[in-house]
Every structure is written in structure tokens, then in C-alpha cells.
Image 1 (cartoon, rainbow, N blue to C red):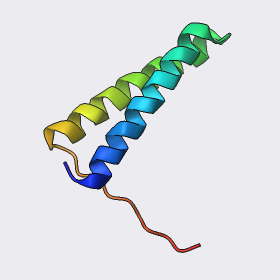
Image 2: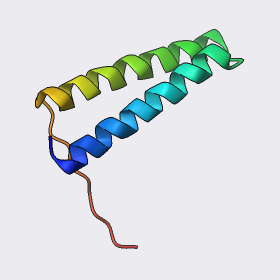
Image 3: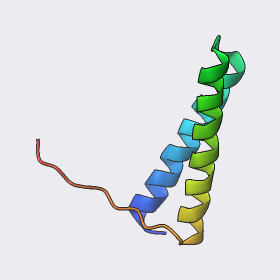
Length: 64
């Protein structure tokens, strides 16, 4: 994995932890919970694809 991919995996892991905490501790509607569950599954799949080398991650560099 390149540096950008490693950073992306780290961000995905942090996001997953946050989403799982919100899902467990938050006062959410059933629809909101289902949306978060879908986001968790999607991010776990993306993380696996990046780690296995089946997805390439690039970031657009913009000037401010």
C-alpha cells in the first residue's frame, strides 16, 4: 500500500469506530441506524479492497 492508501485505511478505521459508537450509544431513528449500518459495511469493504490491493486510492491536490 502506498502512503495515501495507508492514510485512507486509517481514516476508514477511525470513521468505523465513530459510527459504531454512535450506533450503540446514539438516540437514532431506525432509518438512521440502517444508514449507519450500510456505511459501516461499505467502509469495511473499501478498507479490505485497499488492503488487498484491489482498489487504488488517490487524492486530488488543490490549492487554497
